[in-house]
Structures are given as C-alpha cells and as structure tokens.
Length: 249
Image (cartoon, rainbow, N blue to C red; front, top):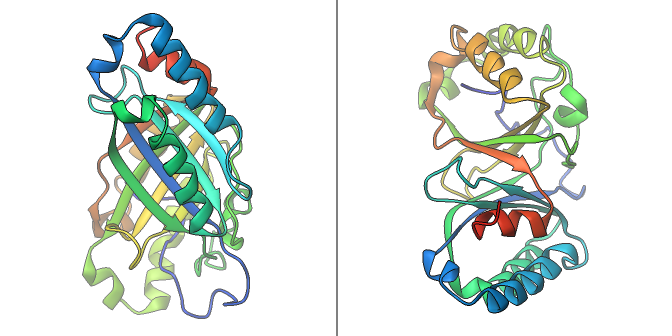
C-alpha cells in the first residue's frame, strides 16, 4: 500500500526560504494503573490534560483522535502541525508534565515535513486536495484518519526519473477514483526512521479499504519495502478521547 501520488523529494522542488510544516503523529498508551486511581483524581487529571490540548502553544495546529479498542497498545493520538519544532516539543512537554502524563507511554512517534511532490506533473497526476503542490498540511476534519510509516525499496531510487513518473501514473489514476480520501504526505528522510509518514482522511473506513485494495496490483506497489504499523484513528474531541481511554463509554 503506497499513496496515490509519488513521494520522492526532488532537490529542486521546494524553495529553501519558504516555510514548510512539520507534521507529528504521537500515539499514547494510558497505563492501567491510571484507571485504578480514585475517580475524582482521574477527572481532575483529565481536565488538566484536555486544557493543554485545547490551548496548544502558539503556532501549533492540533487534532486529537481515539484508538480505544482499535489498536492493542495505543488509545490516543495527537496530530500536531507547526513550521518549527520548538512549539511541538513544548506541547509534548506540557502533556507529559501533567498528572495524567505520568501514566502515559509514547507507544509510537512519527515526524515528517511537508514538501511539494515532483510527480504532480506526471501523466494522470494532479495535486489531490492541493497537498502535492503545497508546503503546508491542513486537516480536512474528516471522521477517520489512517496513519502509517512508509519506505520504498532502494532499487526504486535507481530507476530513471521519467520511468518512475510513468510507473506512478497508474497509481495516480487509481487514487483519483477516490476523491473523498485526502492524503497528507510527510517526508521523513534523515529526520525520522521511515522515509515518509503517510496519513489519509476519509468519511468511512470502507473508502480507504477499497483504495488500498485497488492499489495492490499496481507496478508501483512492487517497490514497497515497509508500510506498517497501520493505525485507524477516529477524530475525537480531547475530553471524549480521554474518557474513552479511561474506560468511560
């Protein structure tokens, strides 16, 4: 499963002086010890934690998601976007420094940057929701977000560019059959373990499932090295996300 558009970051595709967004996906696991605390203590801790999420540092755009019951080792995800790393670090320091933060494990953490895609001009390709041609990332606030790291096989980068662009053409055409699925590509070369961190917003899980299924037979998919773990995230306000993780239906 790779994205409906190509990912390779060309050196000439971006203006070095133009601000580019960092995208950060942090998955938290709430330890069982938290749920054994008195209800009054938990309620107070959740209010404080939610207040940090509702008033993030200046320059940080933030969304919260629930994974309770959907992933074995994570119940919550915080998606933060900023043009600098410092406010993202400040946000996480505030969260971890709260009373509830002492009961959190960071189960997974992914960092990427926005770039313009060199494949937007390929045959059958265009910027899907504007993402491929922009250096900023903005949520569409659709109900579901699907997140996963992505790595291509090294031989992909040895293929001449025009051939890679031809291969990606089929990928794009299939992706454009699903215009309601919105992609956010984060480029992670040199700043995190994967090459890309991909996320897709959708109205329903079925839309994304069908997209991934259709992409499986493409030529481009043969060059996929890694595309796991995969996370199904449900857009959820901070207070409700915390209640679900706390075991309150």
